[in-house]
Length: 75
Image (tube, rainbow, N blue to C red; front, side):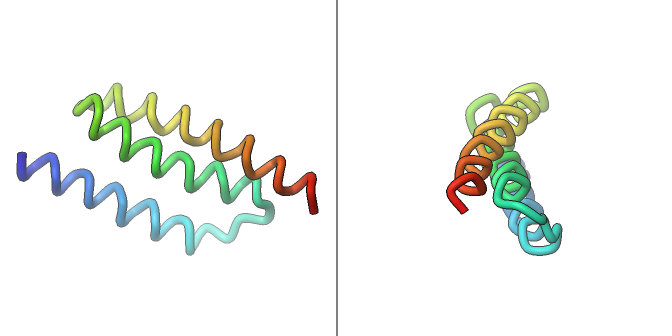
């Protein structure tokens, strides 16, 4: 249980760090980055394995990109 918590906290820390350091040019790119981090975190928490983490990251990135792209269109 403690190992799982450490992995989740590590994913959160890395995701937040990347969101601030990446320097994305558009809301779509920023949304994809944040979505991938949140999706990876959720995938790890739900699945508890690498496969769940990767699926969560992919779904999160796609969802974040779609939302960010719509925000770019509104600008």
